[in-house]
Length: 140
Image 1 (cartoon, helix red, strand yellow):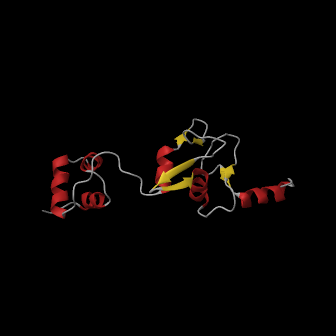
Image 2: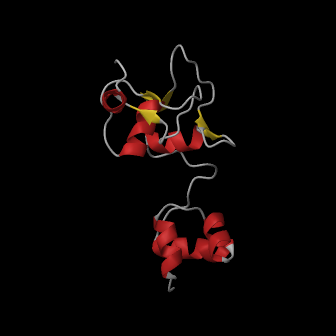
C-alpha cells in the first residue's frame, strides 16, 4: 500500500488517527490502514502528556482579555511552580526562557503591574532590572 506523504508525516509526528483524518479530510479507517502499512503502533487515546516544561506552561497558563497570562492557583507567598517528569520548575523562569531564549540571571519576577502574570514578554530577571535602574537612575 502506498501511503500519502502528509499522512506519513503526521503519523510519525505522533498524531492520532482522528486528528489526522479531520485535518486532512480523510476517513479514520484509511488513516488506520496507513498506520498499519507503516508499522506504527496505534496511539494511546486521550490527551497527550506535554514533552517539556514549556509544554506544561502553555497548557496551563490562562490568557486574559487584556494581554496577560495568569497561572491558575498562583500564590504570591510561594510563587508559581509546575511539575514535569518528577522535577519542580519555576513558572516565571520557564516564561523567561521562552521570551528571551536565554537562562535568567538571578530572580525572575513579573515586570508588569498584573499580579500573577507569567506572560513571557512580561517577566524580567535581575540583569534586566539592573539595566532599567541604570538607564532611569533608580536606586537598586
